[in-house]
Length: 327
Image (cartoon, rainbow, N blue to C red; front, top):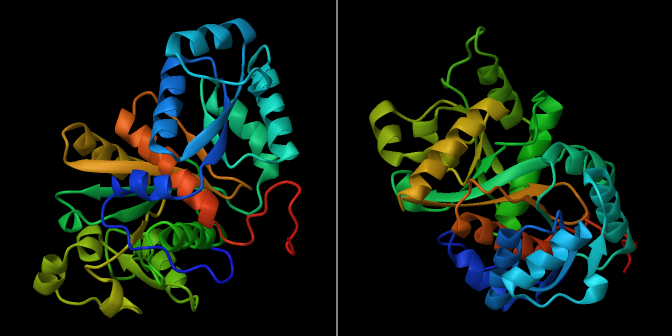
């Protein structure tokens, strides 16, 4: 958030992202691999909701033109950048980003490893991470929560885990409207167990003296999210437990495998109408969303809205190319 800006309203459900984003000034997005009809229709839906106005497509010339025609959307000729092959598309996208004026990167029909390899040198934070905003009827009475990191960070030492917490806290503050988020570091047990390294990691992270969040760990999933479980099992004897146990806003998993399993479970609930999700990759000059065709249309649209909100309220250290701290 910029200096003097009022704190954002408290988010009550993931679907509210579309309305909130629509009330902010619209964003410019760049779409590498912008020659897939379904992605263009998604962008047009974001335009209809008012949180995207300009889209810059980077892709194969003929396929891009055909897709634009089939989708029936209006894209300026100068905003259709032709590039042959994934390496060329990724390189051209980075050139667009460095030129400035872009608020969001939406990965289209291009290999994720290729795009990530080109965009990673632009990172403005030591750790890039995926934060997933979700609500699910069976979890925490359906209130929105953040989960990290289900898809980016594979090395989870203390430094990286500290960065995951910081990135997620930024999203919770900027998008969820939570001034001091309650963060649970998940593990399988609240006690220190030598054969379970995540218990030691959880306690180390909770003991770092956080100023902008309340961090507690290690906590099991039920003791992080369910007040009834806390009442039955008792309050854990851990720093921050009184504030976090049963009331966590952010769930930090001990590794990508745990986070990914939780994400896929919530995604399955989403397909049965029992949950909603939206994801953002944090740590670049602009938010980055990896659009997956396996995600529902609602998840993909909500992810763009999440990125649009974060683009307008991002912390001051996220400077776009060409910006300076005193601008």
